[in-house]
Amino acid sequence: MKEKVIIITGASSGIGLATAKELSCKGLYIIGIGRSLERCAQAEQEIRALNPDAKVQFLIANLASLEEVSKLAEDIREQLAQDGLKHIDVLINNAGTVSSWYISTVDGFELQFAVNHLAQFRLTYELLPLLKQSDEGTVISVSSGSHYRTKIHWKDVMLRKRYNCLLAYKQTKLANVLFMSELNRRLKSAGIKIKAFAVDPGLVNTNIGLKGTGGIVKKVWEIRSKSGTPADQPAHCITWLATEPDARKTDKIYWKDCSPLNPSRYSQRLDVAERFWELSERMSGIRYEGRMTSWIPS
Amino acid sequence: MKSLVCITGATGGLGRAFCVECANRGWDLFLTDLADNSLSILAASLTNTYNVNVYYRSCDLTNFEARTELFDYLREQGFCFNFLINIAGLDFEGPFSERTRSQIRTMLRLNIEATVEMTHEIMKMRDISRTFRVINVASLAAYYPMPVKAMYASSKRFLLDFSRALREELRSFDVSVTALCPAGMPTTPECIRAIEAQGFAGRITTQNVGYVAAHTIDSALKGRSVYIPGLLNKLLKAAGSLVPPTIVARVVGSRWKSAQSKRALLGSVNGNPQ
Image 1 (cartoon, rainbow over the protein chains, first blue to last red):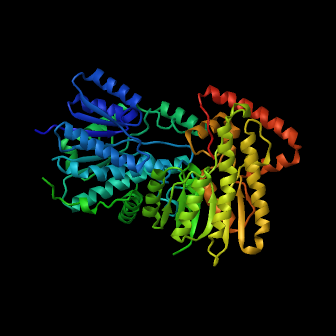
Image 2 (cartoon, rainbow over the protein chains, first blue to last red; image 1 turned 90 degrees about the horizontal axis):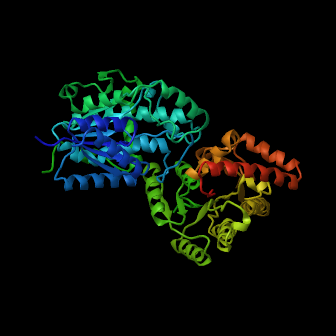
């Protein structure tokens, strides 16, 4: 049997780290992605403390830059080549950020939109050929219940003129659901056996809302996250989707605590998903079309 | 060829926001900044996203020869312009006595010399069929003598007065000049730390760059002389003009000192570009 390869972005803390730990304890090969060398080394140590035989590697990338995302894909391919591997089984797009302020990235995009959505969109595109080499290729996006009761702000998608931290965050989490739904539809119609899922982690006690915020937002996040569940709970759901053959049998997209839920009605609209897909392609400078063939180069 | 919008300091936080705002309006752009690599990344992204033509060339605007080469290049290309947005500028924060001669020269050359010369030369390459508009990025600091930011604030004062005077002088030539006078803007982690260190006051005077860029362009299109983003900042400016400058300097100085010591506690280094 082929060795199972898992890529996890944002793997140095929070839900990503908890997921890396659980999957590593199942004996899978984990390639974790993080922004800081120091935090990644620490995370690797924690994983090895739990599982001394862990096969784990960390790669460094700042997902706010599309150029770095594409370089990361190159680093992943290189790492796999060194390991004598030619496939990825599961890509877990978990990295996310929250920012009180409108920050413009090197590509000119708003930071949350770039990290929480465009990076996923581009990385998945880059790694699609490797995912196609797996018999059980899976893409998982860590979304959130905050995708409910919001929409895509078409006229000003990066909210340049009326930036609001929560509004921007909600929109990116909706983007995750839209992306996974549309990806699933496109893969299916192309006859590719990759499955896409979005995970609702619930209210989790992590520090995502504390790194780029201040004032009231930070205070509220601090108080709310205290009543959240530990990161193990969503990690368990992600692990289940990544490894359980039963999960692949359903057509359900949106999962929480290992059961399917209905995502927002807006996120299920085909016209919205398609239009958003095209916008994302334009913004990240790629076209999925060429990679949407079931043909696998040998 | 359509006439272009020329943006200096294009790849900084505020610069990128202006680039996006202009591209979103469907305007073709010419960008310049120090690093070629950042310019090419931004230009590609703007072209993909907004389907506009984006040209660029890196230039160290503090250098006279480099500026001359830039102007020669622009003429060779046959570019013509209908808009100039002078964003390139910098600040070396901290006591005047601790600045080196090279820092002093760099700042004056970039904030003042480069801005004036860009305006002078780009205007010669204007698209004569259209109104020519200039935006100069000054600062709210232009309204106060500011201890610890003495050179920065007075260089911005220069830009404010220069813009106002030029606007009047060129009114009959279908040229409009607008000075942007923002308070703090969260463009870099250092700026954000500086804003957070000022606490509540820092946060309420701060405006997001996306908002500032959009409203500045609107103001320029209306031919306004000065744009100050944020109601509170307008009030601060008004209050500043009611009090004698020596007292303003004393108040600003004491406030700045307390903010500085707080920042030192937060472990910040220095730097407040723009």
